[in-house]
Length: 490
Image (cartoon, rainbow, N blue to C red; front, side, top):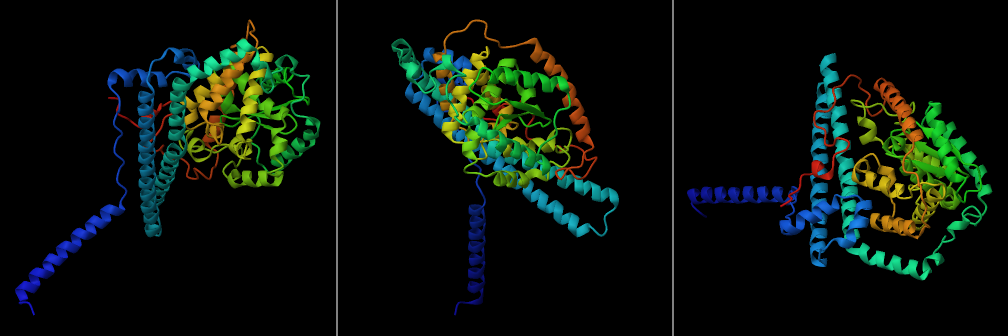
């Protein structure tokens, strides 16, 4: 047996070794922060390429054939964007965990002290929990939606820089040879007389039943009460529908919801949400979106999808989030908060996306929608410009349903641009109108009233009234990705 002093020394050594092992094991279990991505290119290449990715799709379509970046440089930038996305997503997922831990601690404190709390102390804890839920939800949206959308958009523009020159040459060859006339729906001079969705009349009853059931079960947000706004949108949709392949009357409803979306149900029932009207900057952008939804109805995409998802399933999916709608819209922490980061709006549930809209259907609606907007006298690039606005700014958060399960951005933009180039040239295509500007003035009144009403409206997201807004706000509407997640640029 070892002497006592030797045994004591050995126990001390073993204790130190075990402690060190425990520290190492604990450190290994904790997630290590992802290293900040390094810029792979020299500033003389990186800066012009980064600036190009900040341009709109419309600008890039014109400029890409003149840009001179090598395949290796583009590949290096692509890898930098991929690493940057992973870094930013990881950063906000860590924020979610941090908020979650703080939330658990605060809820535990509330439970532990509940019998001794004064009313003021209880309210303070309620507000703290409410605000932690809000910032956690916001961080989740950024990690799971906003940041991936932003980087998907950058990658698409990088693809455009690399691939569009060859695509353009191919398009020019098809135009020169006349081969473009043989594309699907190439008979644009026969719009309104061709068969796009045979049997559209059969969808009217299905659409009526769906709308009635949604209203009866309280799953439809309230309508905008402003007659001028409703009339303007209805008139614009009817103008486009009259120059489309839709063979049933279009029935338009403007919903008083912040969600940036529009959706078409079978039978020509078109729903436009207030947030989309707020986001559109000119009449051709709005016309492009309405034409896209009219195309879904004309091609009977809703009918074909409902073979997979019955009305009952549709309502069930809506019911999963209907509880937070309550009287027609979620109240907010501050004024806009809870709806933006805790609930994405009914359009997400009812739009064709959630029913499993296929890549084929969405690209078909893009092509037909461009044709219908053009045929109605509108600048067909409005759809591309609205898409770019959504992907670059509002789309980070507000456009959740707009980008959900859609085809890849590059494919969608190139497919649309190709169709625009194939269309016969027209003079005097409309981009903006005084009627649109007047509608915007009326819409501002609607928005102001809705925000005022929301302040005192009960909500499952903000049950404690009179709380201060969260001190730590991750995102402000209009922020670009650089503001959300600071990245090296040199």
